[in-house]
Amino acid sequence: MTTVQRVAQIFGIVFILVAIVGFITPGGMSMDATAPGMMLGMFPVNLLHNVVHLLFGLWGLAAARSWSGAKSYGTMAGAIYLVLAILGFVAPDGFGLVPLGGNDRWLHVVLAVALLYFGLTAKGDAVATSAA
Image 1 (cartoon, rainbow, N blue to C red):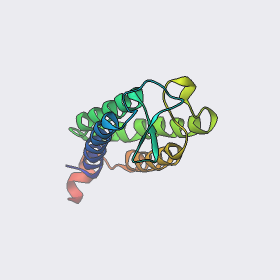
Image 2 (cartoon, rainbow, N blue to C red):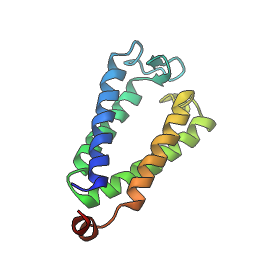
Image 3 (tube, rainbow, N blue to C red):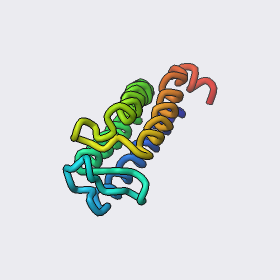
Image 4 (tube, rainbow, N blue to C red):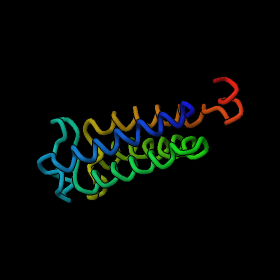
């Protein structure tokens, strides 16, 4: 398994765990983006937010099965999280759908940088195989 595949796998597992914790967080099953639940007392979540985390997790696990899938996951998910970080400053309530403000802004920046780094710097199959 290449580095980018392992990263996709780890992000997939972590996103699924975050979704589970979000679902059991008080207020985490609400659809209210203006008064969301607070995961770990720091991160606003609601039902849609948790479903998105679950989907990103499943996508990461599926993408980890191949180098190209993992590279695409890192690049695309990183770009999406960068957009979400920017939206967190522009529309912290996610236009009434999903809470994107508060500490989520900074978490989304970190996720975007990490995912984009691994997605954009992933070496091809032949290079990764011969280097191992």
